[in-house]
Amino acid sequence: MNRLTLVCRGFVVLTLLLIFFNEFLIYYMAQSSWHQIDCKLDNCTRLLLISDPQILGTSYDRSSHSPLARYDSDRYLKKTFERAVAFTQPHIIVFLGDLLDEGNIATAQEYKQYVKRFRRIYQSKKFRKFRMISAYFQRVHVPGDNDIGGENGDYISNSNQRRFENEFMSEDLFDYDHRIRFFKINRMLLDFTNPDRDHNADRLRIGVSHAPLLIGGGPLLRAVISDLDPHIIFSGHWHESRIFIYPSTKVINFYENAVRHFDLKALKEQEHSYLEIMVPTCSYRMGKSKIGMGYAVLENYNLSYTVLWQPNRFILLFTYVFWGLFVLCGAIVYKMMTRCPFRVAKRQTHYSRVSNIPQF
Picture 1 (tube, rainbow, N blue to C red):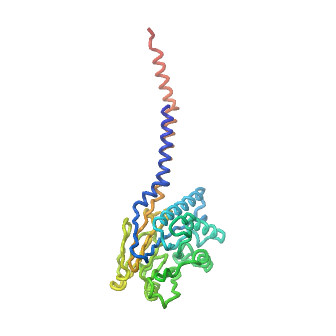
Picture 2: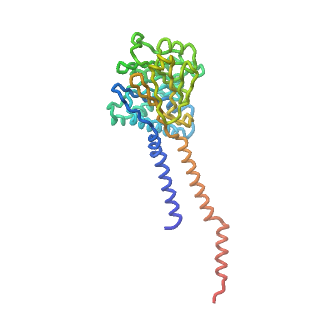
Picture 3: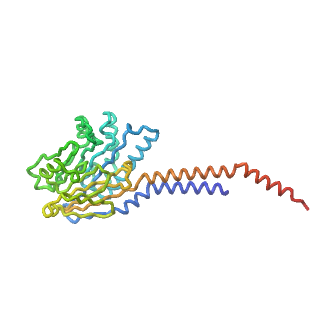
């Protein structure tokens, strides 16, 4: 076996190892850093919090590689979501807005295609093998500015609101197990749901919003505190992982692999404070170095929260580009070394010198 064959086989083996690492092993490595939160009580409730998946559309990017980008992004979202569901086995999945990247500008036909892709990612038949038999978990959806509009004062049409409600919110959860109540807060419309005021005090009250509330203040925040008096608020939008405590100006950047514990009842009744947790984006397309999904466990008024950090897909894609360029450069150098006229002339000169040696 000549040297060239060995080199080619080596490149093939290394390429296969790179693919195995980037497409399989890296996800196991990321999951090994996740923290399991064990339930101590029978009334334990597990929440999986998903923010800003922003399913890619077809209008903003019309380049030749955009179909490949959409395929890879969808595949990444699906793979990481399935792993998160298998790990947490949640009772409730909360989507914190910006489900689609171009929902606010999509035509009716495009919107149907985006919704179909969203369901293909987040309603997989694989979920039947988990402890909860149904493939459809109890869910909560709130719209984001990329779903219905409203960013920087953009106009929000009734048709955008209506089609989001029809496709995503028609079967949403309001009360869970007569203990937990979800309130949807829309900062773009300065509105929130509160259909059963008389029984709010009997429930643990969770506010879900796409845009953060406690950091901005204003009339909406005052109305939410007065009418809903939530124990905890979950939000997204900034693609960051942060914890806000109001009325103090305390902001905690939460990027460690750890579990935070909160006594929601003591926080409200003794410290007279409100807690908001901002969940990071779950899509690598947002350009953030830290990507993940929130995982919260509620036992009575005790909240445990962590982030299921995911591998940064952009870095993995760059390794493919680097490896491809390395192999290409190696092939070019090999061609130059074997076909360069200087090398040929040098060999011929060497042969001629050998032939000129006098024979005895």
